[in-house]
Image (cartoon, rainbow, N blue to C red; front, side, top):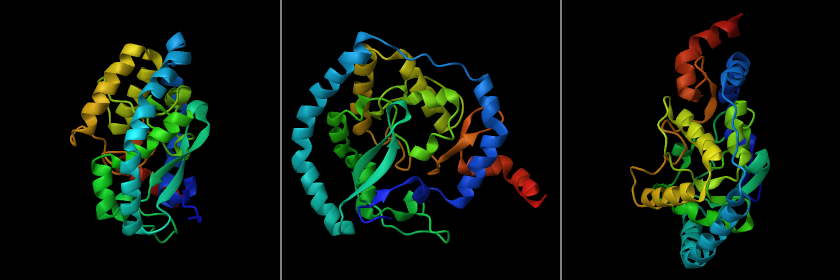
Length: 270
């Protein structure tokens, strides 16, 4: 990791995960693209002007109110993990353009035998677990909302290496600015990532002032409900999205190994 603790793609991906992602990309990505419905983003006065006004209306006072809390959490982080108290990570922004997200450090930097960072659940500190459980590590995200990199409501910004794994349909989740959260409002079959991505593209096709108000209400409810809050690692399994199965559904590493592990080993021996 660099001196300013900027986290890049390669620091987050194990060689095993890269191999699985490559296998699924070769096996199922073209099929998924051919069978997936096209996404048509909303283009309206609200998406062009109103949404940004709403973001500023909410984020400016909230940022000021949270400033002393963030200073306090910064001091706690210093005594928990030392300097620097922040780390930076490249995330996917609007139209697939990368931007830098800044968060409080709440994990150590232990790595595996390949020199890759261990999964978040194995590196997080006790204080870091507390911060993540109550979404306190998200409070700094009001700054990128003010800057214009993010919005209050929108698909959660994901690591940049996800972009090459996405189907054309799910890549359209970046047709809008990423948000603090995009609460799920539709029912979708499949594992967590499939549900998340489909909810994201639904949002892209249904953005409106009323939709954002409803999701802001759900976001506030989520903050005060640990059951409604997303898993800190981003998936129910604590594992990254790696590609699509034979049914064109997004899956994570452990599920991919369960479905295709034997086939991958067989092909690897040939």
